Image 1 (cartoon, rainbow, N blue to C red):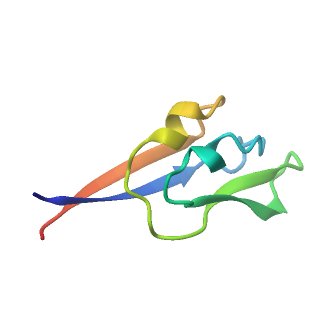
Image 2 (image 1 turned 45 degrees about the horizontal axis):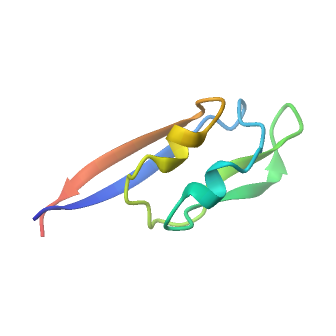
Image 3 (image 1 turned 60 degrees about the horizontal axis):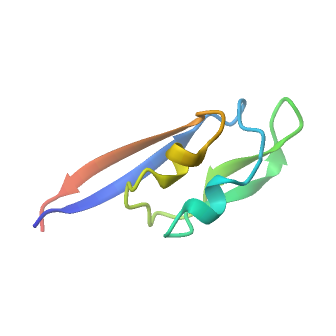
Length: 75
């Protein structure tokens, strides 16, 4: 069975830092940045490379600012 590797892209300028995505991630890939965006919000960011591409974060994001990408890895 091929293993799946995931990655996320967050539109940091549209993120309001609501943190809904943080507990939705089973691999603790997302955290709020210490930096702020142009609107003054601490935005969500990818903090490690453990993403499995489950899409939980994108599904729960109220503003739809998270895109999830998946790549099949050959074992």
